[in-house]
Amino acid sequence: MVKQTRRGKIDSKFRVNEEINVNGNVRIVGEGIESKVVGIMEARKMADAMDMDLVLLNDSQQIPIIRICNYEKMLYELKRIEKKNKHNSKPLKEIQLTVNIAKHDLETKANNARKFLEDGSRVKVVLSMKGRELTRRDDNKRSILEFIIMLEDLAVPESVPRDEGNRTIVVLKKKNNKQQ
Image (tube, rainbow, N blue to C red; front, side, top):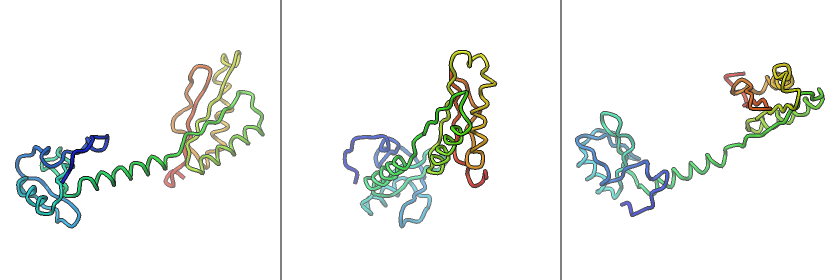
């Protein structure tokens, strides 16, 4: 049975055992348990007989779904999965461009961005403008558009390039197999 635990982010999502305030029938699920609809009292008796906990998974449906399992083990598995997903997330890489960037420099930066994208990271492309360059903002976006075209076989922009003060920003992500 569940012992007193500190309620964390994952813990607070679920109601357990006596915290479950359901009247009538519930659908029980669990490992080695046939999914069926039973009364809440019968579900509690089954959980007690198996020395397991009742965990409310979904009460928004007509018949609430309750899992019979070891609550501590379920939390451990969920935290492990969350940690693994957090560990596997790739950072956002940033590439700086200027308005009058040379063709070769643009190609070099595109190659670097290509490596980042192939590693699974997203790439934030920032075009910085200074002084009089700000007055011809639309003409100056040429270099950022060329950059996007150089990587069109591998990446797609998440949105249109947007202006933020003296910078224009676009985030590129790797194409899915469906998008290729």
